[in-house]
Length: 240
Image 1 (cartoon, rainbow, N blue to C red):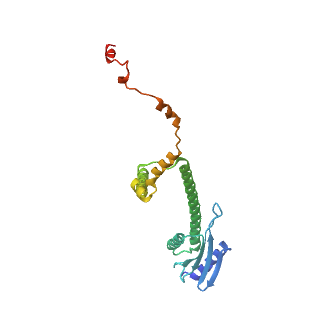
Image 2: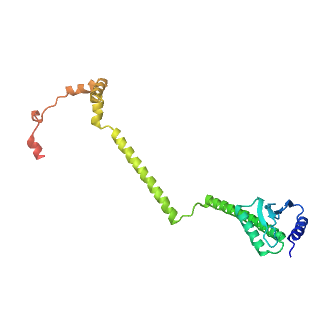
């Protein structure tokens, strides 16, 4: 007949020896305790941690112990789900044998994997940021490569801008035409224009000086017709 109490006490003593700094007994009836598991440090001293609580069932190890994740540090919800699933799998595989050390060891390995995943994820994020920075720098020096898609997009935008420009220009010309007065409208709106030419001629006439002496010698000239000239001989002109 199996002495469950004896097996439980013996395992409890072994666990306290193996995990002196992270093992804590919570109660003796039923036997309940915690073990804090910490991953190995990552490249930048990142660590993840989980505190596991175990409670022996009356017929443990022929019954699976109760377990739960009491607290954690730097774990995602998905990580917690994976750890609880792992504990269940290991408990089923080791049913009939004392198994706490095996369960804790499995969680320890899982935490180390999570740290490696964090490291890999950060490296990928760094590479992605560097790639984005390089692409941004290329854009500054080389601009955006022309493709059919982005050219058609640019042309559609350009056509809209030109259409709007033409509409504004036509509207401005129409507005300018409305504001411009015809000659008739100018005369109708400004009555000074119909007397301005007369006034100019009057002012100009008063200011023009005429030298009458230039015409005095013209009065002394005696112009005679050719027929009154006694020497006038038409026949002589014909013979010549």
